[in-house]
Length: 273
Image (cartoon, rainbow, N blue to C red; front, side, top):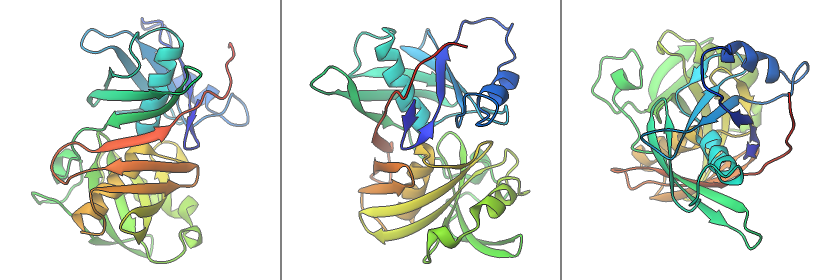
């Protein structure tokens, strides 16, 4: 499945501990020796919500939350008959429970999914980032690998470092810079890294280095974090489109409550391993 080009292998979690999911994720996510994806997502029943999800990165690490992934899970759960009401469901993750609303097209298929991504976390110790401050931290100057960056720190259930850039995003060597930022000592749990153009108050352009996955065409939580940082800087209003290499997400936030993300989702193919 894919959402804004962020692609995932999505399957039922049979339960039990007999499978080494981290090892399996590394195998099946390989684009040369496996199926190929940005992550492996397991879907299961839950007691405190309609369904639950776990997401493993291609390096085998488990992510607390995945914005594009949770939209895929909503469609998967409906298509597989795991939920009865696609218009409103709840999904459990490692970082909490998320409320999701789906739009059904004339053929009865889920077309778009809107997610309550909960309130952005701005306290440094909760992101986490090793800076002694009560937050929020915006445009924190740091030199990483001879690059002068001004980083803003947000957690959307997973950590993000955002750098606002006036130049051409494609000119940034994200393949080299991304892993260095991800593993910097500022981030005890590593971090996702976004570089952002503010095109106007209703449109951002974002490239993403995703923790544990590398460069991805889309990142839902990264889009939300980038918008939240731009909102804290007064660069956007309460709603904007975030243009990613794989597509566009609509993000809404009033600066106080939950942040909302809306985007399309698609099943690419199905199979058996």
